[in-house]
Amino acid sequence: MCKGLDDDQVDEVFKQIKEELQLLSDNRRENSDESGILYDAHEKIRDILTEYNDTLRGRCAVCLEDFKDEDHKTLEKFSDRQDLVRVDTCFHKYHLKCLYRDWFMQRKIEKDEFGCEIIYKIPKHKKCPTCRRVVNDSEIDYIKSEYSKHPEVNDHAY
Ligand SMILES: [Zn+2]
Ligand SMILES: [Zn+2]
Image (cartoon, rainbow, N blue to C red; front, top):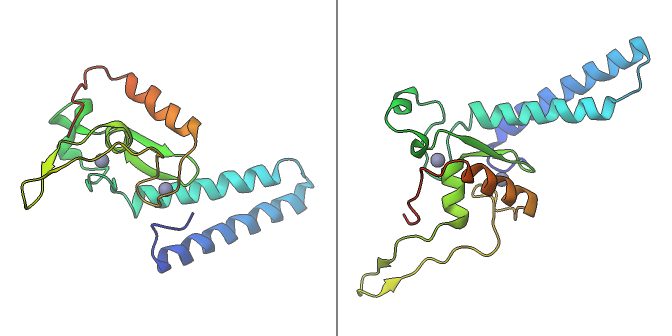
């Protein structure tokens, strides 16, 4: 889950996680509340990692545009790739449209240097574009259903 972060960032993430776990176990000692400590820990770690993906890695790995580029927000609607989705298991974030393109859309056929056509096939196994982890069906279904909420986008090749 640390792929996509450099060593310093990984250190920083671990430090934060350690502090949060310490806090959680301190709190637990004080009010002897045993319920949900693992759940809390999991939530905390998730928050930390998500935040790192948002701030330090605040770019979409598909189009390489910053997520927080305010200037681009007014240019287009959904097709400006503003909607963010997260590949749930590894916490990598993308513009919805970028991820959908990567997984489902046929690319335009290109010519190589000899004039032969290069055909890009739609990948059979969908992977996270950042860490190349094969994603599961529920993640794929989620992207499909989110994308289907935007029928105004109809370019099926890029
Ligand atoms: Zn993008
Ligand atoms: Zn990933």
